[in-house]
Image (cartoon, rainbow, N blue to C red; front, side):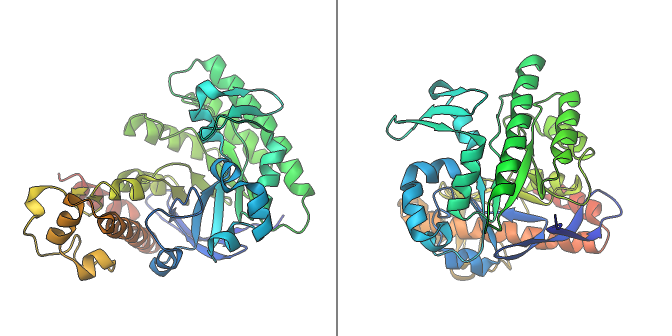
Amino acid sequence: MDNIFRILKSDKTSQARTGILTLPHGEVKTPAFMPVGTNGTVKGMHHTSVAEIGYNLILGNTYHLYLRPGIEVLESYGGLHNFSAWDGNILTDSGGFQIFSLAKLRKIREEGVEFQSHIDGSRHHLTPERVVEIQKIIGSDILMCLDVCTPPEISHRQAREAMEITHRWAERSIRRWQELEDFEGQLFGIVQGNFYEDLRQQSSEFISSLNFPGLAIGGLSVGESPEIFSHFLGHTTQFLPNDKVRYVMGIGSPDYIMDAIANGIDLFDCVLATRIARNGAVFSDDGLLNLKKAIHEKERGPIVDGCSCHACTTYSRGYLRHLFKCGEMLGGMLATEHNLTYLYNLMERSRQAIEEGNFTQFKEAYLERYYGK
């Protein structure tokens, strides 16, 4: 199996590294943040605008796309790329986290998972093999294995049982993926183990042994403190092979991203950037700014000096506040573009710091200002 990931530069002061991820729809420079387009769209953004920022890898969600518009519709269009008019790469989550969130509506069995749709209550049954097949129909450039997500504070026995099912499902997933013909999508395995060090090590070593093209770390950023997140992230990555691309699922705030990069993570995603934008919150080097606050009412300057997004190059903070106070949808659209532009630029700044060999210094200075210390 050809390695789809090539490391370009390793930081001397941390585990951070830059690299190139080669996928069917083009190369992706890492570290990279991936905007979330759950239903085949990044909320509030034209796909052309997402591409113009510089993104070439966005997320879709297998669970949601399976339910709506449905696999028959996607198959008739030849996949999600044609259906949504997106020319870049697509990573699809397996839907495991969404099914996990339907705790009262799902049953996990050895064969797979049974669940009720949150839309109409209809019943469905998905196996690890079927999830791989669905992602082929979607046309995913990166597809994820079906896994068992677990909440914090469960017992060691419960965490181990969930991890072992995830491992058996991973074996079944990679076998089915290897059987697929005329499909270039790359399957990533997912490490679980909850918040137990021994299970995290076991899961990292087992999933790595299956020789997936890429590896994802699941079960973090589920409500734990930043200190616990950082500890278990660092603990997990030490057991992963250095030459495989690493993806931490579900992190999107700049401080968590900085910590992930320092621990040798290459890819991250989260709905945070777009969700908070719709409520008037925007990223800056000085932390989150709430555009609804009265302090911005007569502010003529941009959100961030030098930012290339339309919100910053065209409009004032005062006007943006006005849009949110009036409930105008343009406010959320502009704030979304700003947040995605900010994170893209932050990745470029991080890659430059790694290239120059001073990422730790960059991270510490960034976080000191971000936290306002």
